[in-house]
Image (cartoon, rainbow, N blue to C red; front, side):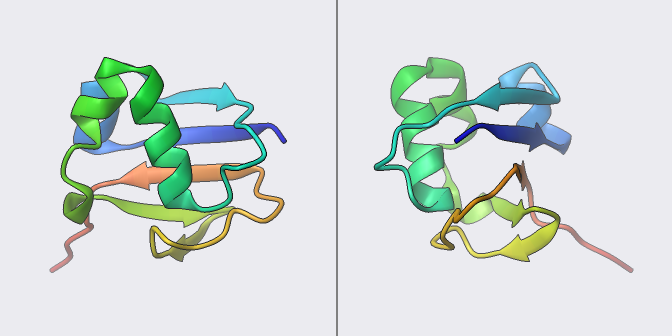
Length: 85
């Protein structure tokens, strides 16, 4: 499975790119698994993802909790909490 990852705000700044394409292994089945897999292989990702409570995600443009299944996701966005007002 190929997934387009999108990063926003300070997550993008810490990782150093707005997007990347990845092919995670079959045992990566949730957004949290994807974050863990990325963090294991990259110090930059590990630093950006160190505080999971400060991360939000969307799978195929639908907001989801980090424990949401990836299913056949084509796009996953990772970003800080959004505030409005």
